[in-house]
Image (cartoon, rainbow, N blue to C red; front, top):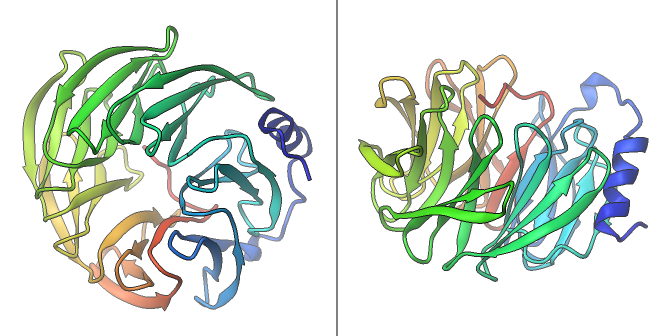
Length: 323
């Protein structure tokens, strides 16, 4: 098995995965406390198997060519590559330290890894085949989630340990600005019009809105307690935000910057994924070892599926757009 990060990325880009049948789509769930990846059948909700990975897999994303799904195992210090449709493991890269949250810039030239335990952000250049470390940027304390501006010139990082958001210039790998925000900032997302950053304030009950060009907070949007993470509705206007403490998911209008809807769901909703037709939302329930499947139109839960301890990231290949 390939172990070099750069070798593995080259292999994934060139070889890809065998073209599976469309009906083979699985839902990938990361059970962070169990250090396992669990696969679910998207249509029947059946458990299709669980396998062990490095400690604390938290977040995941597909590669730019959509041929691989990258699972970031933070305490395991590795990236696990899966077939995004079948969940079959393709390889492991073991020389990436503490990848808590990961992200490719929109232009696909940068790969960023937030190392929450190590208080730094690792920035890699990506040429479509290989990753090359550009710089490790110290950020105190507990860099958490990542967002980018539209032209891929800046990466934005929340810092849970000191209640701040920082902007990093990717060309120079230097910090442009750092500003204070609410308690325990977690998820961060750029609005589709590239005007504002949305920050989930996990230690309170709102989303903070930042004008990233002036580095100033311009508004707060009242949500539920424990505002945590975002998932776009794919309509270039609305986004979901999960509220882990109040057991709810709000819908934010990113044009008016208002809370326009709520879905009640128990168990600490966390990461979310949306079907391509926009009709069904899946969310991990961090506190009760389950995944909820929600009908978006009626805002009702269709199914509660048992999974492992502290489920965090969730993914399926046939998903709605993320902007």
